[in-house]
Amino acid sequence: MKTKKHKGAALLASVIIIMGLLFAGSLSMLNWSRKGYNYSVKKTTYCKLFYAADSGVKYAANKIMDMPSVGSFHGKAKEMSNDFLAIAETLFPSAVFTFERYSVDEISTNLISYTTEGAEESYELENAYEIRCRVSETGNPDNYAELSTVVGRFAVSPLDYSVYYQEEELEIYPDWADIKIKGKVHSNNGIHLGPLRSMRFLDYITTAEGLYQGASAGKGVGWDNRDGHIYIANEDETYVDMRTNYYYNIVTNVDTGEISIQIETEYLDADDPNWEDESDDKWDKKVKTKGHGVEKIKPSFDCSTNEVSEDIATILIDPDPRTGEPYYITSHRFENLAGFVLTPEGDLYEQTGPVTNAEFTTRNFIDNATNLNWIVTTNQFFNRRNMGDWTNDIALGMVYPTDIDMGLFNEWLHLQPESISFKHNSSDRAGIFYIHLSNDFDQAVRINNAEELYDLPRGLTLSTLNPIYMCGDFNIKVNGNGDTNHAALIISDAISVLSASWDDRENNPWPIEILDPESGDNPDYYAQDPCDTTWNCSILSGSPESLADEFQATGGAQNFVRFLEYWRSHSFDMDGSMGCLWRSRIQKRTRNGGKKEMVPRPDRFPSYRDIEYDEKLKKNKPPGLAKFYTHKVISWHKLH
View (cartoon, rainbow, N blue to C red):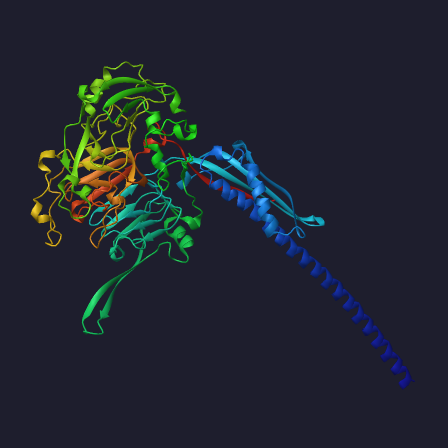
């Protein structure tokens, strides 16, 4: 028979067992918590080590991306390491962080597997740099983070693009004209688009900043109200509009009660918070901006000695100082590279010798311009745009060009010996002609009768620090294969188009009395009627700095090639490449107290413009232009 005493013993045993289990569970929980805490501490420490290592590889990567030339890297790798370690001492205390390894090395490109396609199709990998950083916990070397990054240096040319802008913002406001651009477009700065009607882009658009509808802040008053179509083709070559919404808004004036209708438009541009993802979806990744990782493209030469520091690329067209300048600058100046040089005195020289140093260049006198039938220096014409703001000083608009007849030049060149450097197949100077006039604002080069160019082995490059006027069609005669004969490059301070209908005698300034700015008169200073014009060439030149009010843009790509005639009912087509490398200096020089140049009224621009990239440039570029470069992070690895 059971008793209460036996029941009490069983209860006591149960309590003891339960207490034991609870104690064991508590010990287990404490042990688990201790392990979790230790792991958390270790993980937190590792995160700190990781970020320290990541800052190390990013520091050197950014330094490499800022290098102007490959020569800048040699001798600076150790300097980069020392600079970063000095900074790390203040940011990462040695009581916690130990930098066991920090190295910056150039590695063979054969070790790199990287495919360029799409917008980067023309990139050529020339150099690769590996950055490795290993950071351990002080006193605990087994807890460390190690990262590796490889930065590639890619050669790229402005002539790989249909439209290329180096420093200036790329603004395209084509007024009433329809414009189509076939070929890649790139700007190191922002891109701003504002058509009244429509513009079409058939290829990739890249910018190291952003792509926007409307004018940039403080420029082009009134251009934000433009609501034209901006079509960008996707991978299927289907045009997709930047405009996402278009609606009417009824507005009532609270003071007068007057009702008006306003047209409201919405666009997808870089101001959108989801720009990267939405643009990728909309245009199949054919539009890339800074947020997509686009880096700037830079010249391969260090221009710190250039007197115009904000326009570094002008070193290409500036005269050679011949003062023992470093080879990596001298070897890029067109005056030093040229086979022919025409001096301010009108003397034509042949240049020979290596192009790496101006001190090794030899000049052989050929003749003076007065004895050459293809050079004329006695003409003059009037350019209202050169006068800047309204002024009665007609002299400010006069231009006294050095005219070069390319047809007669071809005949003269045919009679010259094949051994001269300008014609010789193996010469680095073949096809390069540098023209150096005085830098007075009324001096310019004018190219005439250039429908057919001389058959040169590498094509033709005409370079000058002066403005150039191109009169009539350029390089349109075809060979037996149906192609234009030459790769051709025009590089100058500024460039203007004159049609074959241009007549100096008919382009006279209007009567003085209608110049009064208070009269309200808007004189028809572009009265000549042109003819349709076609250029087959690449142009590298300067952007205008132009007057701006509610009827005039601040220059922009539609004004990059300057128009002087009444182009409204005529077309201007260009097959080649168009690049803006600097801001014009001589074309906009102080003619009227420092005023900016005048822009034509909108109806003076061509009603249709077609800018088409010449695919032959991918394999056959004109001679002399220095390589440009961009950098990209090729790989990033967490080694530990």
